[in-house]
Length: 478
Image (cartoon, rainbow, N blue to C red; front, side, top):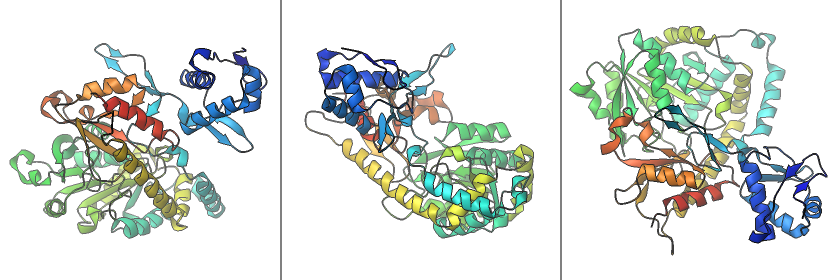
């Protein structure tokens, strides 16, 4: 039996093991070729008729193998353009470390890491339409050096949109466009370190990269514990937090715990801010709430004492590098100067395009459709984690509210440890996050809860079921 094809411009050694059955053998051979990188993302495969003839198989066998790999997200098929290797089917490289530094990256077939939406659902058509409209209307000066605060078109659109959807009170003059939440936190940290607020509280656990960005910009960081009701803001008035002038919180949906700030704590946080402190509100995936309407921003109840930060990273994609800050008036000048010194201003074309999407309500439509799709994904995750006959799933609990693009799975003492789960996940070629690396002081984890963080937004629709299969196998320890 031939084990390569040559009819098209693809020449690939494809050993098909007849001992596993013709269809299964072909599926395994194609999966291995994709996983090993011998079939790159975007590669066009031969037609089912051509490959069947080349390999001496029936066309139905090849069609069935293609259909299975399409369902798993390894392949994509479009009428008129044939079957291609999916861009998201490429292996995920995870750097591992040892006592002697980084080792070779591990290759993972399934991706349930947190932090990204489904990039295959980027609204390309809507973005192109908005881009064309924006470019048609853009004045020639838009292509030169611009306002460090950002294009007035986007700032005006955001002032209306954030007020309508998040309860944020803002004028365009209070908004600064940044290249991400990380830059926003870095700019704020740098300004505060030179003011009378050199010590900042940050939620613990939290995104390590964001915490490091604040540290490097100057302020000392004090951990603010988080529980099922959000950040424990009552601690801010205790002696342990003397000297803390500002606090970074995620009231809508905390990452990674997944809780939302309770009403009483929201009021306490606002009162603390009005007493002469500053709250930096990271509105982490606040648009995605599935069990009720999204909770409004804390900024709406204390606008002169809260810096509100949001971005398009979870709604559209982090590659756009579009985020925004809504500042109390007294902070606009200093942070504008810091932005100008950092990179002069954010890129222009993306700002104009996003402004057009917002004003035409294409952005609203995309967020609504995304909310429905991600809600179904979280529901499917919860359903798959229920105990089933013949394969009991015990030793863990799904935590956090029904929101966002991630879920926390708490590991019970009687079950698998976090390290054991991560090891088993690697064996099933599954990329997930552990909670231990997100604490302010990771070396003190022995008395902290163990958990894994599941990002159900990252996989494509076709790849998601197979990723959940790998997760179920990982957690099935009895």
